[in-house]
Image (cartoon, rainbow, N blue to C red; front, top):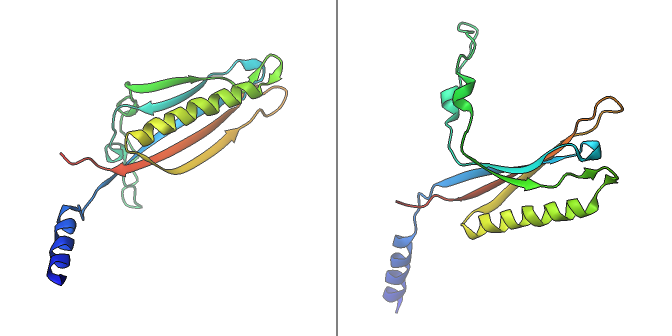
Amino acid sequence: MKKLGIVLAMAILSFMDTNAQVEYKVITSVESIVPSGLGRSRIVSASEDRNYKDFTSNRTEEDDERNKSDRGDIRVKNFEETKLLNFYNIGGIRFQNIAANDAVVTSKINTMVEEGWELAFVTSAVESDGGKDDGQGIFITRYIFKRTKPTN
């Protein structure tokens, strides 16, 4: 009986990938907090990959040459964009819009989970209206997902 248990355990372990690689994906929501509903709100997700090393230089005391990579090469032309509602309309803050955005973001998260992604981290920030002459403001949230890379 012990031998059968050992053989069974070894068989199960042989199917496990001990070198499983993890991949990450960032989804960003940008919600406008511009008064009168004049801003734009979206969920964005890149459909292309970029290697940060292609746009990175190592500066030292001896070699202080600036990074000369082309910004145009960094830009992503293929991305998914989902419309959201602005937090404000002409009448002020719009709680229905916030609830609607929550429903859309929840749908995106649930779809990502169905596709095998796990929500690993969430971080957010705000740049709010700075007063009478500012008229600017966004609420940004980054959702960082991870999953085991599919094997080819």
